[in-house]
Image (tube, rainbow over all chains, first blue to last red; front, side, top):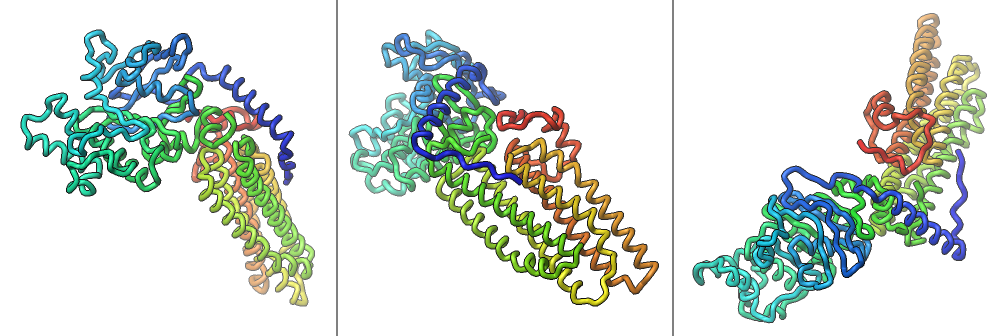
Length: 294
Length: 249
């Protein structure tokens, strides 16, 4: 049997090797990301998108992405910073409408219905497609009012008793009720970071959306709060469709059914999560999830 | 596939260290097997003694590599090809350790054999089977060192030859036993050695299966050779190996 020599670990050679690796990856990208690898489409999707392009001014942020999000599934979107995953997520409930320089092209459908149709009301759409952000952002109101806010806005409760019931149910589902049941009228901003994020999730599910978008929902939280929210995501996926953007690959591996890997505005690979983390097919996906230069 | 190019140089080094340790353990096990067979065929009790005493080294290496793999899993949470490497290594060293045990069994038998005054010639019949098993082991370790899945699948095809040789040998021994019942005891011992050699071949085959898992990401255990060839190696066995050939199933 033969033993190949160890790779050179001398630092000057290392930077040359590093540059070479980056060159190779760039070359690989130019040549190979014409078509998404894996299975971007599913049967009977909750959300389907086709040929999505997004520009900030003249600068393209997303280049021709087509992707389905399965019903009652968790889809995780991973990729290096600036790869377009958050931009794509924000397209799904028209959050990009609020950015003047942002231009969105392509076909987006929620249960077959065009999200960007002229008559579509973005506020109504966002009640169906809720969003949880990276930093917990409770309103400067009481815990109760935070959760009741959307319910009142959309007139979903007929009376006070019904409102109370929705608030309690939402807090319970978010796994927060037992911790705050005696303090419902204290300010939401007084809670810990993890509790605040669960409050935001309770606020999102209070209006009974169909889809929940999460943009790095645990990146500001400690491991225990993170674990609680990950458990919650898996439970919520029984009733909701969830799309999550995360920088933690372990999180993607733990919570999602499918994983999509974005790279420089393109969708490189989508597949079942188990498959992505054991046998990815595209070299760029492999490099990213194994922590190699990319 | 490459082991290097991680953003963390230390991670590169850790994986490279694990791989090198496995190659070293493979080298030792191969040497143990060669020496065991030599000692048997040449009635060399001293060499047999060395083989028997060095099995501890093999065992210690298995434990050390296992620990290193556990540490990497805990610290790095390897994914994709790195994960497959660590898993494959954990399995490869188990088989290597068992090959070491078989070599030790042969060596101990040789030691007992040398205590007797008369040595019959029955065990010279083992040389062909021994060479087959040793070649399989050597090539399997080579396929692991080079991460060569095509070679690995070629080696899987040799199982039949080893089994056939083992069966032929058993028949021959039975004939001897029937002709001369006084030879039953030594014939049975030779048969145990043959069994050990055949097992060494099987363990080497297992290593080849892990090489295919590592390189191609496909678990080919308990699948027929024909199925493996058709499904994962549609091109000729001499086709170039490489990580980028991960095929769609």
